[in-house]
Amino acid sequence: MKKTRRPSRFVNLLFLVSAVFCIVYYLLNGFIVRFGQSLLWIWPVLTVFLLMRWYFVRRMIRTGKRSWIPKKLLMIMHSAIAVMLALFIAVEGIICTAAFQKPPMNLDYIIVLGAKVNGTSPSGALRNRIQLASEYLHENPRTLVIASGGQGPDEGISEAECIRRGLIQRGISEDRIIMEDASTSTLENILFSLPLIPDHSAGIGIVTNNYHMYRALKIANAQADRAFYPVPVATSLLSLPHAMVREFAALVVGFLSGDFS
Image (cartoon, rainbow, N blue to C red; front, top):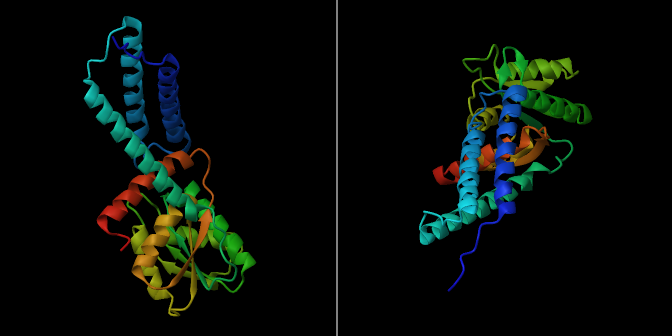
């Protein structure tokens, strides 16, 4: 008679460790960054599923009883998880192709994509974009910059105005800054900024966080036959895992909705 393979205690312990990591990561992100981040709820939901898996398998190990879930259904579930994991890894690899590129020197324009403004102060993501843009502009004195981003209902000023103020504070001349303060999304950032660049042969850099760079370039290339280049901004180690998960979802939705065609 064929013996039933017992679940591994070590593998099951990994599920418990993963659950603890997820809930701790959620709390750290919430308290240090903010709890209002989109899709941050994924981490406590994932914690619940991991804990459920750990608990039921632990009970099986202790009692010696087989799983109440039919074997064929378990195989289907495991296969679906494997496919989803493979898709996730593949998409994250695609995201990384643009995340760590170095921008060319002497671009004609750079577009700084807006991000959350807290009152009149930039969020961490926007502050990092402003800082990198100012460094590029100092190194390339002939480059012009478009500050792109409208004003949300919970923002004291437009994202474009916040970018403008930040660049001026870092020594960038105001006559190099072009304002675009009507956009509310990455797509509108690009659509509303392009008419401000009359030279269709101009080299255009896009300044955004590294995890967002691939999608931003895909959107830009879908809107106009122009020369777009990545100017990626580093993301903090705390924010990066959640940002990569969120970007995976946004990229899949973008491909399914035809945003990149």
